[in-house]
Image 1 (tube, rainbow, N blue to C red):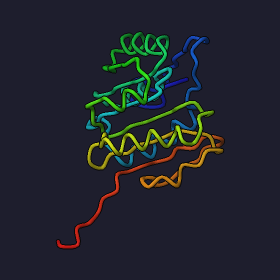
Image 2: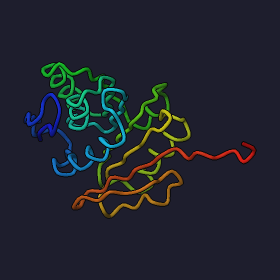
Image 3: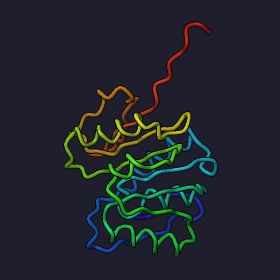
Image 4: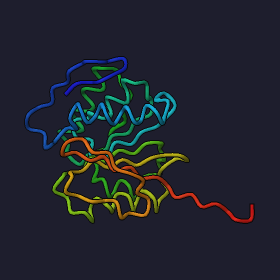
Length: 186
């Protein structure tokens, strides 16, 4: 994997072969960050990277100037790799070894972008539960976005907070936003 843009542009990062991960492809990551680049100034946002794996998405945000990044993964080897890499590259990434669902149920954190890349073999209900908890607990800042990466065989469009999908080969990024209601009295 490589960092697409920013301070560490073109830097290759090699993860150990024994990590239980499927990193987001460079092509899909570049497309995702082109979308996010039109929505946010990276140095003004906070990010929560769920099922962080190798830290691929966290490193991309950090390279582009994001200073508040939280990475969550249940696997010790993944967290160890993220900590080691972020230290080597002098990136300020706070990592948590935790089950993502338990983390979401308890965390007081609110961020601008939440990115989740769960295993593609999850059931649709497991994907939707991520969105449910995030919106029930109001874990996004105003104008924040949740992005869930999944395969083209998973359909998350029925979730009430679903905004749109972007497809790249077999990868899909589903975007979710808080529903804002307009008060008719105003």
